[in-house]
Image (cartoon, rainbow, N blue to C red; front, side, top):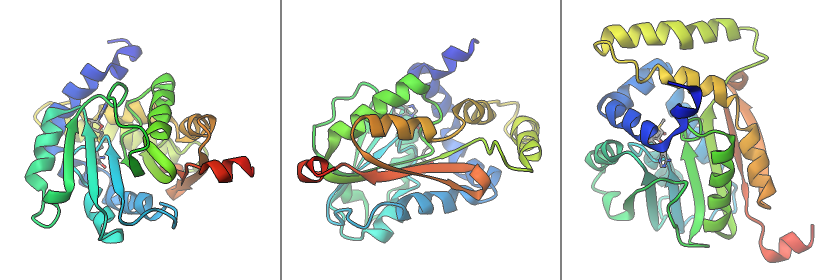
Length: 248
Ligand SMILES: C[S@@+](CC[C@H](N)C(=O)[O-])C[C@H]1O[C@@H](n2cnc3c(N)ncnc32)[C@H](O)[C@@H]1O
């Protein structure tokens, strides 16, 4: 398979369909628990002006792992609209709904690159570990979506596993991602090589830098950060109101 094919939405959806039943525990174990910390970092990065009682959109929501962090920080949020292309990841998410959250979560099974989400309908857009399976051109299209669906004054935060280019221990990290994880996966998951793709996606993705530029090109105020030597990077910010944009 050529490298271009791994960014085809149908290919990605099928990959996550296959991963869905073990996604939660595998991602927690393979990241030594860091993934949970990083989701919290993503939610805590949301600017203070986030409308705590508003409409939240979770892009590439998967099994809904970020929802407990969202409802913890914003107990009065009105709704979380969860968008994901994988039917099975949706089904796993539905299984996970807790009684006190289910009435506030709606699911949309859709390709984020094409779905016609209502303009200016979201107070806040979040996404955890959903960017790496998109190439640069696709990331630019997601930036257009984010800018379109956010209300003026709305906020956003994204985090993604990244390639820690300047970290002294990067060779060790790459050895773990490129050799150890695929080996463990083949042994534990009976020859499967689905999660091993994460290494390739992360290597190609590099960091949230390009996505930050794409969001800025859409007129959003963007902040970029690195966490744990660049093993994760994130972006957060605000869609300016007309008044604040004019005063720039
Ligand atoms: C690595 S998982 C992240 C899930 C979750 N946000 C988390 O923190 O664990 C990436 C998710 O992105 C979804 N996805 C990939 N491409 C998509 C697309 N084009 N449109 C919508 N969802 C997509 C996959 O189905 C998968 O559930």
